[in-house]
Length: 314
View (tube, rainbow, N blue to C red):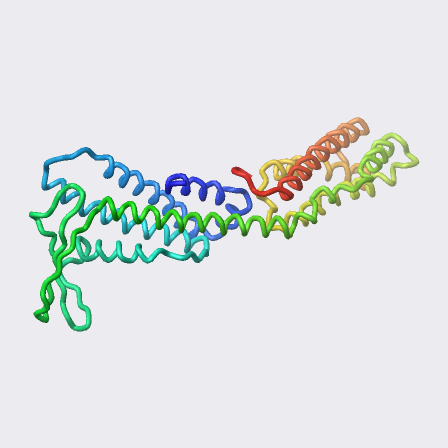
């Protein structure tokens, strides 16, 4: 994969529900990460456009290409470094990256003065050597040492950096996938579907029975509690895996169920103050039953997801 494709793959992984939820808890890291990914895409577009640029006879534009592309290379390196920092991932960097950075600093970053072992170095782009794809860089020394000169091929630097950063980004993706699999393996045996007792149909049958049968009416509140306990258990399991609040469908069902469960409990436990009659209670119970079934299906789908290798969009 090229850098643009790798950028997209990283975005796919950090936008998964749980990792995104974790990253959003550290706003500065999330903002830095999103900005760095944008910069990678932006600089890659610019560098690709430079490489595809047809020949132009303009020394002024050649300077724009020289200064601009070398600056783009350094900014792109910085962006990848910030991605690793925000994700707290350490990678092996190619030795070619510092060399490219040094060329940028010497040629267009800080060409006037550089001190090394008490010797001052100054750098010059040799104008007569400048062309659309490179230039000769001359370095002179304050201690009388003979000047040095080297040719800088900008397309070669771009290619070298692309190869080096591809390896870094591939390693980032690999470590993100390893972390996700480690999380899934840790929790895949704690199935969310176990929160829903096998006796749920029995609980609901007892609630329906209690609505109209005075003999069983006192047991209604207890069976409503049994149903509500399933929701408590599901929330606890999600909290254990750091996944509570990250599934919109689960959040929505919890919001829908809060009111009817509370009213059903009041109907059986505090009938005198309840707003419900028997028909209302029956309808509320039927609604809760259907919503619980849907919530149970969602839990089973998440269990299946945890049992699999992550795919795009998981």
